[in-house]
Amino acid sequence: MIELVIRPMADAFMQVGVFVALLAVPFGWARYRWGPRFDAALERHRGWGPVVAALLTVPPGCGGAIVVMAVYARGAVSYGAAVAALVATTGDAAWVLLAADPVLTLQLKVLLVVTGVTTGYLVDLLGIDPAQGLRPVPGSGSAAPRSGTSPVPAAPAGVALREAVPGTVRAQAGGPVPAPGAGSPVAALGVRAWQELGVLPGALWLLLGAGLLVSMPVTFQLLDPAAVGDELLGGADPYLALGAVGTALCLVGFLRDGCQVADDDPDTASPSSMAQVLRQGGREVAFVTMWVTVAYVAWALLSATTGFDGSQLPLFGVAGVLVGALVGLVPGCALQIVFAGIFLSGGMPLSTLVANSISQDGDALIPLLALRRRSALLAAVITTLPALVVGGALLLLR
Image (cartoon, rainbow, N blue to C red; front, side, top):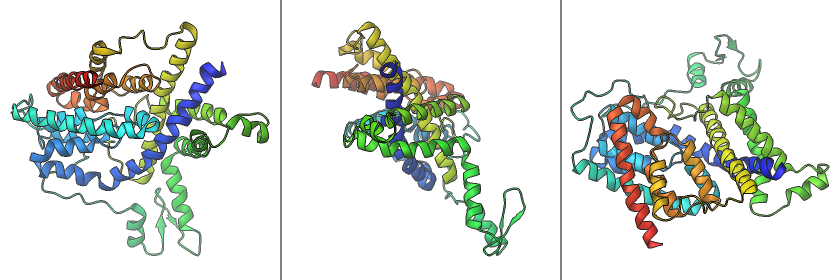
């Protein structure tokens, strides 16, 4: 039971979840801090659209590609830019790969960006755009400002209120909170920040911090968690304990959020505060951890009960490239995360992973389906073509 279920659950949280968390905060902060500037650049420099769109997908997750879909629906960028973003994105599967092999992930991302830019310019050169002649979609996301305008960040609420009411800080409910001398405004602001973050995300981040303290030395083989447990914790393995509890907490968050990731629509793709960055990061961690857990546990049970090692799947050779490209037609990140987990466990070659990574569109295709259905369906077909070409070429070269 421990080796078949508990350990895969712990591995999902300790080997993937904590490293996703470690990366989610700086990437989320960068999106919060500079995201609108990149969005505005898309509209100002249409000729560079495919390049900028592909580069927006470099951070893991689907937020960059979703922003491009919203800007395309407004008619501010070309269809080639939208296709470039869909080809270049690896969605939430990038978190899994980045946690396991950062060098390979970087190489894969460079390949996808180049492929995305090339495909995007080719689409524009051929004049392909199902939405040509249609009216722009109004209100298709507030992530990017209109062309010719500069985003003006709103002042933090606390700063604005302190300027308007010197010596006081007003609570969100409207009542005044005493300024220094009659109470601590820093403490009040800290309490409000935790309230904005929420109990579950706050507990998850505390557990992720504890998990990181154990996972890092285990990853670099600096300590044996079982020996530490025998010596200090009465035989309890801290790695298994933290991993199992962390995965359980991720399950609660995953179910509470409707089994969705934080940036799966244009309105939530760009965080507006650091508390929102942490909330979205926590949802990202929960989403990725749960699907990695599904992949790890299913693989462990399948291997133990049947002796299946992956070689029986049609994931090798030409058939593998074809299967990887076709699986990429499925919208969303869940199946792609499972695919990444199979690759890391040795169940498929790199050519199959590359074909799947190019073909899959992550969660970005979902809002595009709502905004421009014909464009979304055609884009799903278009992205399979470079997937087959590049995956097949990689198969021949290796």
